[in-house]
Length: 412
Ligand code: TYD
Ligand code: ZN
Image (cartoon, rainbow, N blue to C red; front, side, top):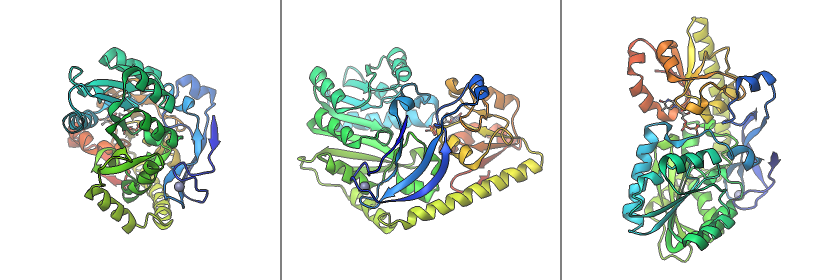
């Protein structure tokens, strides 16, 4: 179920600095039933982040098998307001700028089909590739999105090319970092992408992770923490070329990377040069900024636990707002469980009625939050801060406070 890599998945290097040690942790999306909690058996795996001295790619070396992680998945992209809006504008850009009528668009890791649903099926041919059976089924049945229930491999790419032809655009949002065999990912893209096609992918940006102490975005599914520099190295190794990159606020800070075949005439944009220079100025090609992050994260844990202890001492009721995967990294690393949190409210139906992995906080329907609001809500889904503060104006008006843990714990 778990093994440890010895070499960097971008450059093959063998020298690393370990800079975040988050302890043995359960899988962040492995919510438990009451029976499973009672049975007391829960798999835990080391959660440590390393940076490679060859290409300075930040990554996990402990790999949990993809079948364990992704065959049944509790993450549905559509549970919030922010993401559908982001996807709609992404789809519009792909439709307007990168494709024309009749072109074929393939999404790797298409989840519940939210992004592909934004394309007009009469204008573009679309296909999703999604390994989680339950999520793929939802996309097919509820959204009528053609979805192949498969992992992304060179074989999958070959099969699609044979049956449906090459793709003008390949999209992948927050999936590349989930895949251990990065060389296999780029190989598949090389096979399926039209000669003048574009591969556009998004991943959380390492610069934001470091600047905003977003250590909780680390969990076993996320094998890679991309900066532009190692992303370029990965593309070049795969016979591809980095041509453009854009930065977004989504998920705490995201980059959208545009790649073409290495033979393409395109030159890297000014934005590529700008972000490479930024990374250089942050000394991301030395161990220091990584080790400094490690120290800040230890302090964050101490400070957050102190604040929670003080609130408890004042007799305050505390609950978690949202039960995202990242929340489980935070709760497990800080040791915050049901003795501190009455419950975690979450809008995702499949999570409700279950318990958070490791700390076993019961996940409840948002109605519970309405009926019995806590004094303080620990905002685990801090990447939706604005959406949540707006939505919960009533709670705040009545004196309710949010405790936002990232980048440093503060009461709002
Ligand atoms: P998200 O941050 O997208 O992902 P991850 O699991 O990768 O860390 O998850 C957000 C979670 O927060 C999701 O389970 C839904 C929940 N949520 C709420 O319960 N209420 C809300 O108002 C919002 C915005 C999110
Ligand atoms: Zn490397």
